[in-house]
Length: 274
Image (cartoon, rainbow, N blue to C red; front, top):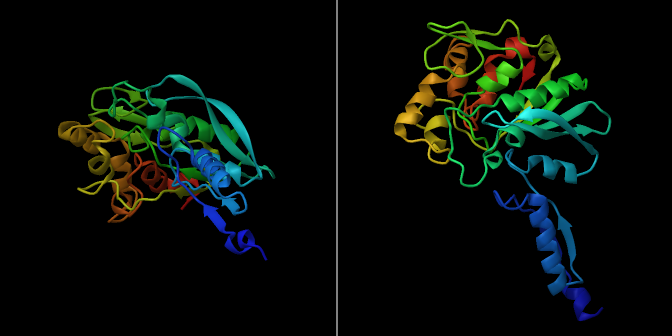
C-alpha cells in the first residue's frame, strides 16, 4: 500500500451557515473544494447543518427528496416578496423557515431595524400556502427572526384578530390590547401536525425571555424591550389558555419571536404542536 493510501482520511464537513454571508450548503462546498485541492485523495462527506434559522431549508433540501415551492408573502415590514418552502417528494410533508419571510436577512443592509413594527405575518402566509397545497405535516424552523410580535402576525394570517381598548378589530400588535379573537382561525389547522425546530431554551417572558435576550440584536433599547414584552397580543393568549406555568415559561418556546408559544397556546384550535 502506498503512503498516500495509508494517509487517506475520511473527513466529515458539517458547518452551520455564516450568517448574512453563506448558507451552510455553500460553506460545506467551499470547504470541500479547498480541502480537495490540498489533499485530493481524501474522502470528503459534506453534511451541512442548520439550527432552525436562516439556511435551514437549504440544508434540508441538500439531503434530497424535497421540491422547492414558492408563494406570495410579505417581509417583516409588510413589503411583498416571493417566499420559498419545501414539499416532500410524496407531497405529504413540508418544511417552512420563519426567516424566509420574517427574518433579519430580509432587511436591507443599512436599513434601521424596527422591532415594534416588524411582523411574522409573512410566515403565516407561507403556512396558508402549505395548507392550500393539502399538506398537514409541517416542520417549521423559527430562528433568525426580525420580529418581537410573539407570533401575533403569524396567527393573524391564519385568521386571528385583536381588539384595542378604543378600536374595533385590528390585524396586528397594539399597545392597548383588550381582547384576542381566535374564533376565525382557519379550520384546517385542526388537521395540522407541526414540529418546531429551535436550538434555544429561552421561555417567552422574564429576564431570560425572548424580548430580553434578543433586544440588542433586533435593534431594541430597554424602553422598546419593555414595550415589546408587555404589548405582544399573544402574551394574554399564552397566559390564559393553559394552567401555570403555561407556555410563557416553557423552555424553548419563547425566543425566535415567540411564534412557537403562540402556536402552542392555540393548539386547542390549531391541531398538534410539538
